[in-house]
Amino acid sequence: MAPGDQRQRHVHRGVDPKKITAETVRADFNDLLAVVHYTRAAHELGLWASEQALIDRFFPDHRTPLLEAGCGAGRVTLGLWKLGYRNLTAFDFAEELVDQARSLAIERRAAKIIFLHADATDLTTCHELKESSFGGALFMFNGLMQIPGRERRRGALRELHRACTPGAPLLFTTHDRDSTPTERAMWRLEALRWTRGEQDPRLVEFGDRYFQDEAGRTFMHLPDRREILDDLAATGWQHAFDAMRIEVAREHHAVREFSDECRFWAAHRG
Ligand SMILES: C[S@@+](CC[C@H](N)C(=O)[O-])C[C@H]1O[C@@H](n2cnc3c(N)ncnc32)[C@H](O)[C@@H]1O
Image 1 (cartoon, rainbow, N blue to C red):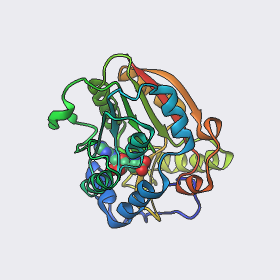
Image 2 (cartoon, protein in one colour):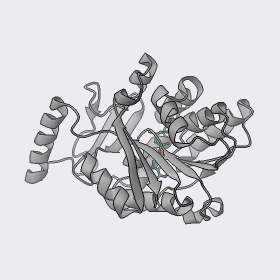
Image 3 (cartoon, rainbow, N blue to C red):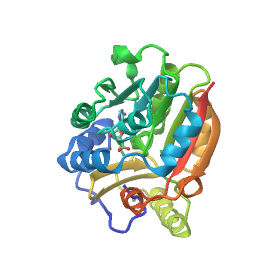
């Protein structure tokens, strides 16, 4: 997943005039290309050095009940299990990925992990997630930013807030819209397209991208820092930390191939 990557090509405008919805994103993650990509990452890549450093820092107690949103094929949750966390619940709205995560958990003798099929923007449909019982939550590798529409992203933050106990940490990542001069120049052009009404008609908001790469079709919203600070404040989360990945840890080549630079965020449930 690399929004600034030149290998990516935009999905052509005009092919499908409908706006991108949660259903579009779910179908893209259930697609074979994405399933193979994320399953391989769960089997072979595991936790990044930066993820592990921040998990150690914000979730020091291995007995705390943790909730992973957008778990995909289980890369992060199985990584948490390997570190010794034993009270783990993870969910994703792409059934194919949840099936892969369950199967990997059995293979790794981690069948105690609870994997659920649920949508982050409405956890009330899942009785295991109705209570405020989690001492921490994670939404890693930009999953939150793959929810189309700012109000729906705020909805997901509110749902995680409801599922967590007071003071619980939340860890997630975003891709910055303005981290390099090239990206700033690209987004200035995109802003001009929006002013003229010439943007990809399927995009929901300025900052959205819909592209295709080795992981299949990917929708992603790229925020600026202010946007996330406002969203956290509006949904009851107190900002605790944010930094670019490179400031947190030096990553192995395989991790940099899998995901380009991103920003980590941590907040506490108010
Ligand atoms: C980039 S993938 C990351 C998967 C996994 N966490 C990893 O790091 O390999 C983002 C995940 O978020 C999930 N996701 C996106 N929107 C979601 C939503 N509204 N509810 C639940 N899961 C969602 C996708 O299905 C996908 O598995």
